[in-house]
Image 1 (cartoon, rainbow, N blue to C red):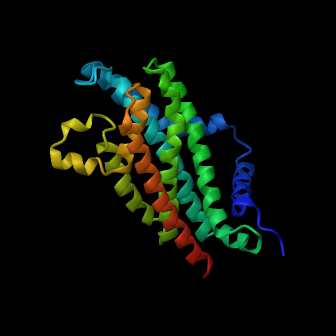
Image 2 (cartoon, rainbow, N blue to C red):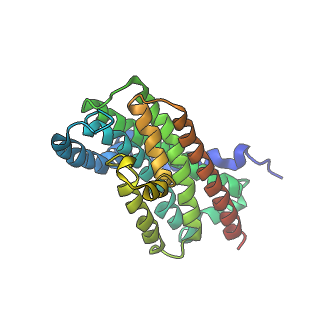
Image 3 (tube, rainbow, N blue to C red):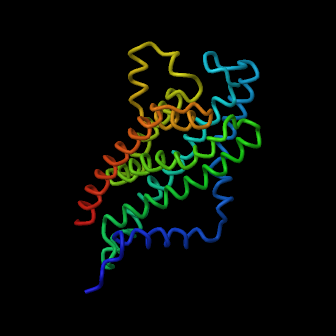
Length: 258
């Protein structure tokens, strides 16, 4: 009997994805990933920022306030793109994962491998977007370099969510429901304004959103506003990602058994 590879073969799933994408460079991936958030940065951060000036109570230029939030959102979207539509196609139509069942790769290895690949893609996106922020002169603290590694928690949380969603999807239309959740969260999770603008009960709802914690973590590091609150933000993303990962693994195990 063949010996099971380490980590259930997760590293082999990652290597396969690297091989498939070997025709493109990491910077090409980063360019496509950061295109949309850069447009938001130009339109909202730079354009509207010229009218807003400094953010009240925070005393930083509006563009510098928005930039780290867009960094977190870019890494989130990069992880989601790799774990929703792409994974669903391989799961439902290509039956790629079913073919792996005849190899020593385990279901846990499949899930972990796709999550690691999504995190790697998000990392490339984060590095590219941080370079854009620096080019615009929006880096306010040397701690900003940690916003990208911290963004891997965002990639972990939303990548695990995407894998769970792909497991439960009944068709391509199912991902419209994902967007129905993600778009309002992107708009209202303090991406473009501080949480203090909300009333108390709305603020409680916003603070329960995973993207809120991803943005707070990224923004706190980018602006050099360090404190115990950042540990709570990181803990939230770890717990959320852990729960979603457990759901994804359970669902995939059921699908692979059919």
